[in-house]
Length: 309
Image (tube, rainbow, N blue to C red; front, side, top):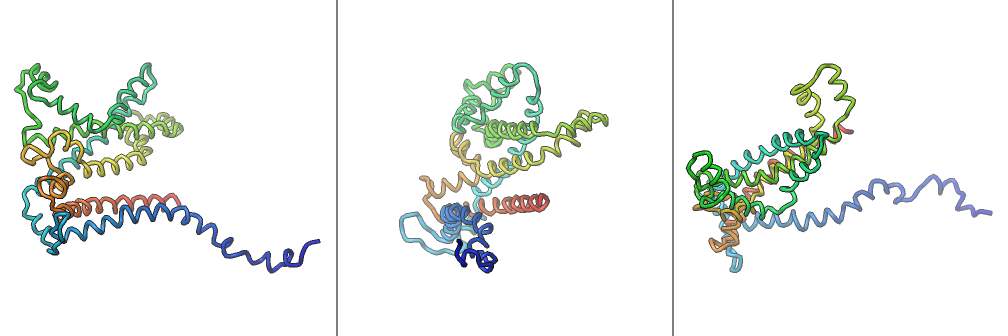
């Protein structure tokens, strides 16, 4: 015999508050810890850094409010302009890793003997430390006994001290940075090539498509997600460039290989300054440059989710 409350039609028709909102609330409960961590460790430091940029502060004494003084000084700082120009060179130079990675992926996406060994060799730059790559390229560029010296001598050319030449040093470091970044883009495209739809490939072949037509009309459209990720990671990597410069030149010669991230470090945390306010002003400019790109990425992700729905 069951109780009257358990079989009451009213109790069956009125589920509890939690039952009615469970599906909507559970995702937010899972996201809440990550959102709190993001607020504490990312959002709050950003606003704190922006606030410090309005002060003249050495990190120990009493901060002195100077308003936009640091930003006004930045506009007349030639070292800041050199760093900004080098960031632009890094931006466009790093983008070369995307077509290079695609080309290597197409080359290695073959079913021939020994292709797995070849893939492993091309994966190698991606798994080793950027510090090691910086050291290797420093030896490669060594104007006294580097490999580049011997190659140029074999070609009958005069040796060039790339890392000591203020006109070439940034390009030399960008080439070193391209080495692991191209491997990363290649891995993304190899993953994408393994997921191509064979029915579309066969249909295109039956229609007579081949070569460049097959690549641009059939293959590349299916690689759009891989291309999007490659572009996002490459651009962010170009704006965050720091370790290669620190290992290979430490900003030299005469500061001509600095980028904004390295100049910020020099001004805020090295023996050149301990000017926290000025350093955070540089960081704020770098953040605003990234913010433009972040907004673009978020807009693209939002549009893709709308198209998926």
